[in-house]
Length: 306
Image (tube, rainbow, N blue to C red; front, side, top):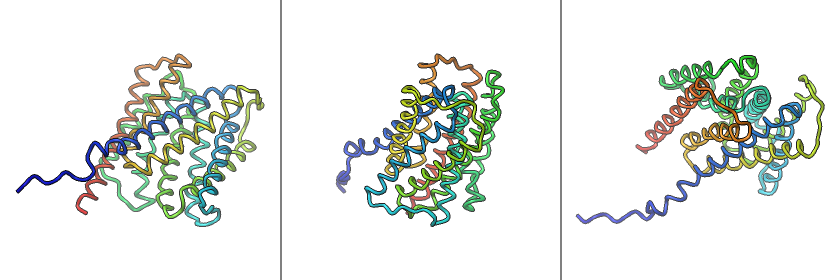
């Protein structure tokens, strides 16, 4: 028998498209890190509710424009399961901006990125899928990492820490809800979420306490515009990455947002990280990445026989 011919799609021809989803995810992670840094820069200038309104308002405008321009049908009241994704995502967004303005940014971003662990745990009650046994040790290790991150420097920020953890929890609910509305155009989903989140941010402005008046000078205005712009750009890169790459492996690349945020804190605020904090961050990142990679392997193994 002769040597079989090479497949039509050679590795050299596939290398660039195969790498693109990870490049897009890196760009998205960097964009979200810049957004988080700008939010931290605004925390002493205005209340967090205003920053959240700037983020969601600009995102809603862009989402609606993209949906209308692309001919996507906008949805509102129906289907009801879409509200699970939008409400959970809105709660997550509110918690995230509160946490970013009341706690160290790198630690908050680390806690946000625990959501894959919660997705694995919540898939049991919400989807009827029993999580594998190896998920539970990963959750325990992540909780140990959270405990180590609570250094004396930030000992009085328990509410912000709880908000960051709850943000990752509600993000998991939102992602599970997103899995249940796959038949709806993604642009319509983003537009619906953005509108609901904006309404939630406006309600928080009036219902939750504020500590300082809004001062819209050129500096604060530019930072708020940057928060909305980088959040929108990050969302677009994230959407492209997930649309064209394996979700679990792309999500692992998304964890680089933590590293980008830490670099920005060192560069602009000359922050020094204690050894205990670095160990805690590593103990949160490691089980999250491991859970994502295990999920990718299980999916590949399930598809292979077909």
